[in-house]
Image 1 (cartoon, rainbow, N blue to C red):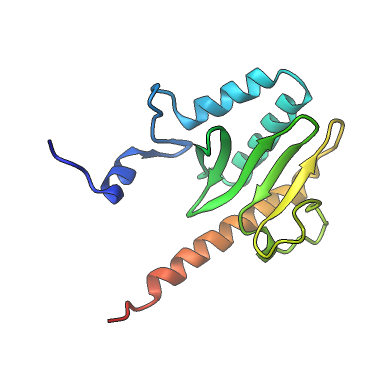
Image 2 (cartoon, rainbow, N blue to C red):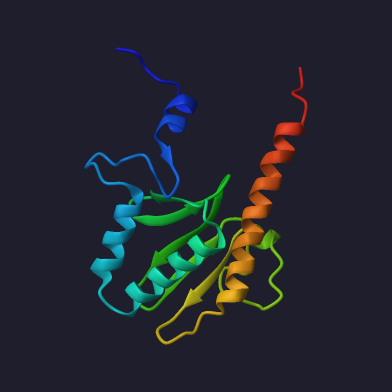
Length: 156
């Protein structure tokens, strides 16, 4: 039996919009679809709306399903997650502390050095324009960080 290296395996299984089939054969995108359907209340609509905005802001986004049931959106690294709780849908930006937030969308996890989050409650309106800008900024941060890493010479 030939074992693929992690890099080759990841490249071979990565597909825009979903990656790596789960053991049950479903993709991360299918898991997210199922989560949206199973919630069956305002959180379904909110998570679906957030997902749609993410896809509009970055058509090359890759959906993942991590940590036993958390939707994750990536582009050269994690952009954000979409956690669902009883009273809130939480959109956590992995590098949120490094992002400009001129419209003050971030309203949660403000004390950390790295992450920032937006808690959406039932009835909340989404400022789609501002959220798209924040997502695009997160993608830019990820892609610029990756480009910088590629340019750095390897030390001996």
